[in-house]
Image (cartoon, rainbow, N blue to C red; front, side, top):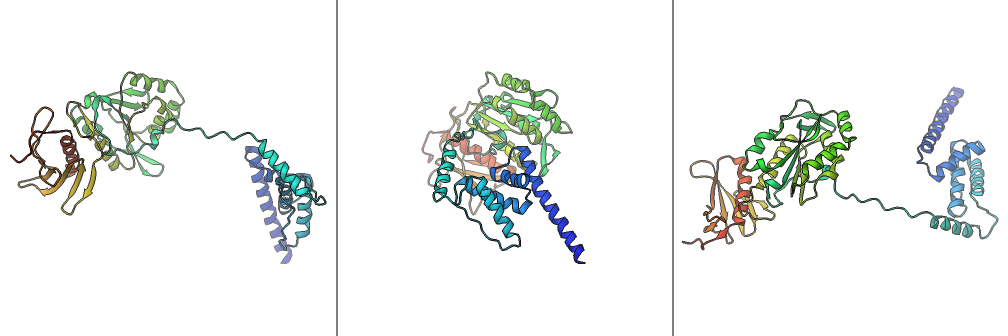
Length: 385
């Protein structure tokens, strides 16, 4: 039985050594090997050492080459003598001389000289602009922007990530979302078409199959698509960009990010389809035709005991609850908690501080719009009559 066990152990040990040496040979072929690993291979090739003894040889060589003292650590194994001899030989091959009193100091100086003579590592190149895939999701922090200065990039197939790495075609209902807002016809909409690349379009008709990864690679490899995007945006002043694409479409946008304008607001839709729709609506809600004065700044949202609240400057929008007849009631309050009476738009139209919203899902949107409207309004009277 013992010969069989010995044979099995020998086979396992041979397999281990073959695997370890094979990994280092692959590193050597790839150019990713370091000096210590090269010493292991030299121990095998020059002296016929097996794996464990070759590692001891490399330890001795590394100690001498780095300017360290001779220091062999005993492991108490039955091969300790062979490992010690290999360590001593590696130490000698690395330039060490145990008989020299000043050997360690000499080698330490040589190691420092080698380091000083190495070329200075080049600093990592800084990215001139963040890739669109790293852009944040839309929020109501940014100030409203004129439709004519907004850029929306969409795809010919809307997709979402079902599980990591798995995409499926979905319906973002882009046309309904965009055209529900007045003034969007002045916005620049660019579609990534699987056949033509970047094209100017109205709201595209989505296909039933997303672009293939191979076709995306072909588009990325053709510089003319970047030139086409630059030609589309030439002469157009853009202050607000939304990338509403995912998957391979997003890879295409990343590849031609240099053709996109650098501006104050650069965002993209993310995550599930439901969240993408919410991000799209949030971004669309910030557009306006440029004729009204709107308040800028970060709307601070909070949950009060009685409902949602939002603050912008001196104004507070508060969801009071159900309206007297139907719908939901929103009140705009000035400082001190009083109704914001006596405010008017730039055209002199009085603003009503109590707003009824029919659909509860639109409460936050209507509160944000009201806060921006009151933030840009003029107070004509003190509001007490």
